[in-house]
Image 1 (cartoon, one colour):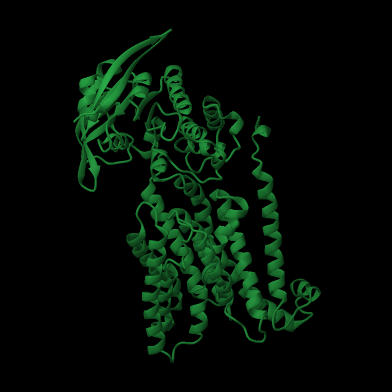
Image 2 (cartoon, chains in turn red, purple):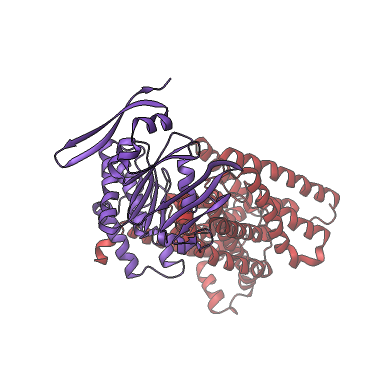
Length: 334
Length: 263
């Protein structure tokens, strides 16, 4: 009987999964090979097989490009997951940690630690987390009423981001001597990311990914509406609260590592939904992979477009993401 | 011991009473329908009974246990509720929606058991959706969609099913289809049904008992022949009407014909 019960969508998911995996591997290889110094594929393989052959390439790959690419991938995963979770909980396709102000909350808290307490850089992720939660709570109280009305959500997010942004600007002016690379950080950048950044993000990505995969079943039930979910025995308020915490944690760790990188959490869940549908059991893992792929490719472009100048990856994301945001608005999403 | 009891219930929204002290006892295996004008508190009563809305005072008792004191899943295994016009993602396949009905049974960390699978198949067959199994919610007609939701509630295998206007937006054929399905489930599986309906004649045709509400107060309660009379209809809906009893072959029905607004 089982064979009769195979969903015709099954094959499509496999194909999409295969493409995603190929894109990810291709993105990783290309991103490591391309840059101010191009590394031929043969030499790239040699770096991993026999590190002694070309010391220069080895240093470039191991100390500069590899950690940078991996941080980019993890940040992409975190932001995409955060966006996917928020869009589901708020029942709003424009919910993205950047747009609704969660990233700004994380960013301000992170910046306070970076500038005022530079010795305690280990505190940046937890501080960002607290900032993100505060922002999420504010948005929740202002814009949530059984679902989040798009306009109210976006406007509240804009206002909150502007308000928190004003604090950030004040800090950069008052402590201009201590601020290095803040401009890049405000836009979201992967320049100079090291293994330390990777170790900083990795545990959060792990918690976030596991939490989101577990949460995907809950998100599916929540998609049927609060009443149905309650009727099926789901403790709706508690589940929503925990998932919001998870989304804030994911966004905060990304912000702590690379700054205010926007639009990943908006675009990726949308495109993933178009490709494989709205079932969160697939949407969540696929969004994670596509998030990683997108940031890795965007960063490769950011590094190589005006070489030897490097753009912050956030600028590339904004070039792509802002028009996409406008397109979603124009399409008249309720 | 009463089976399902609404005990001195007072409930509403934002501190405002909508239901002002109602007590009702429901027997197992009966179909009861709540009628009343807009704003009379029908849906509110149903929501409280279905554990979606916490009472200000009073209690909802399932075999003498307060359902608000019971565990979420323990209640959900016995009591199913279908709110008015629920919505699902348009690309959700019917079989997935129905499978969500198993949520209270298999929990979130165990996979689908054979029993779960059987319950889903049974619910899909019982609602006549076997050939629509892989259709998306967005591809279904209004009647099919409503049946898909009922299938979800059936897969939950509740003893009591609460439905808020299950016939909204359906044409007369689909209205009968849905209500006959409920009647069938009641007869064959002893399902207790408590629902809200707008149409008095449908309520009379398909219920063992009718409860009439007005302004949050129960005005009448009893079998359809007793409740459906000119005086009660006048009091509840403020209209003039004529009540007929018609017999055609082996079908006999009580029918209320509205004549006009009472001045």
